[in-house]
Length: 68
Image (cartoon, rainbow, N blue to C red):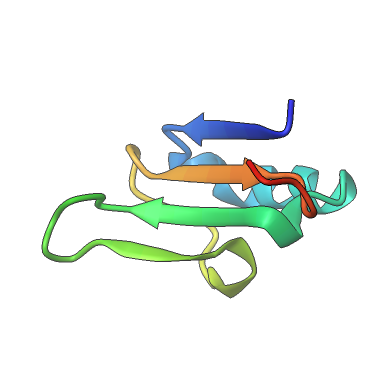
């Protein structure tokens, strides 16, 4: 697949970040926390500096170089 959504990241954030890096997909990964809320955060996964995330956070991944 050229794109995927990883939902309910929560306490698994650090593990997901490691897997994405190992697969070479971290460059096209975007972290989303508190979507549509006043305190929402949207940033590249490389800028996330914590080991855990809110339960309903998600990571949107696309292969670099695709139009997805």
